[in-house]
Amino acid sequence: MAVKKPENMTFEDTLKELDTIVGALESGELPLDTAMKRFERGIALTRQGQKTLADAEQRVEILLSQEDDGPLTEFSPQDDD
Image (cartoon, rainbow, N blue to C red; front, side, top):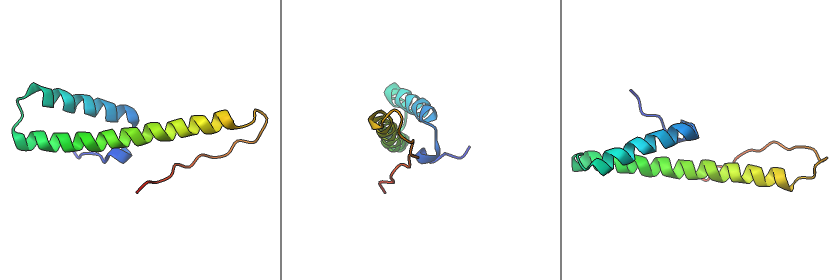
């Protein structure tokens, strides 16, 4: 099975994979190389999850700051890369 890039995953899928990684790392049964690869993947997933949450928070702030009868504007997330 091909590994999806974190930026192409849903937030929920990111959390599920992170949960799986944490469980594997906590078991203490992984060889060091495998544990390091899983840890690196976990870091990438965490960063993407944080970005997704920050984008959602920004969207909520935009919606709450607009006048009730004002026109809605399209949200386009900024790419930090």
